[in-house]
Length: 129
Image 1 (cartoon, rainbow, N blue to C red):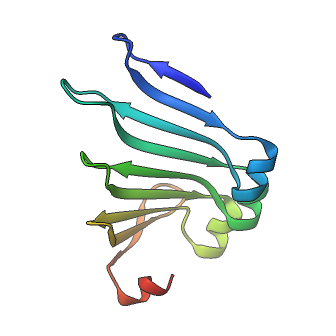
Image 2: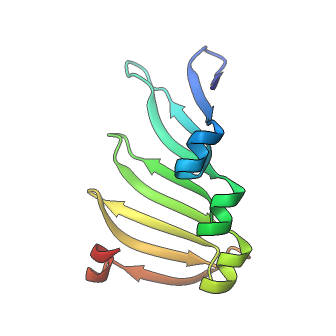
């Protein structure tokens, strides 16, 4: 684990990389957590980044994921990046999922060039995923 501090000595980032045994369980090689500080408050987690192993990406397509949090620590957005093989099969290489009160409300799909290719609003079918 590596901790990065700002010029005031406050934690701004924590990098955690995992053992081969742990990577073989969930495919996550490293996690990076980003924090912000405000007066009279403890550090607030703003974003977590997950980097996946090559073998996990080869099997599931996911290479990277990010979770963004609001002021209260609630998840407000997730982003997923996919490898080229997955993108060729599914026709998208990145997805953003937006949350409201813990429930997914909207998905936005992007192509390899970063252009939006489609958007979906909340649907009942999401409950089965």
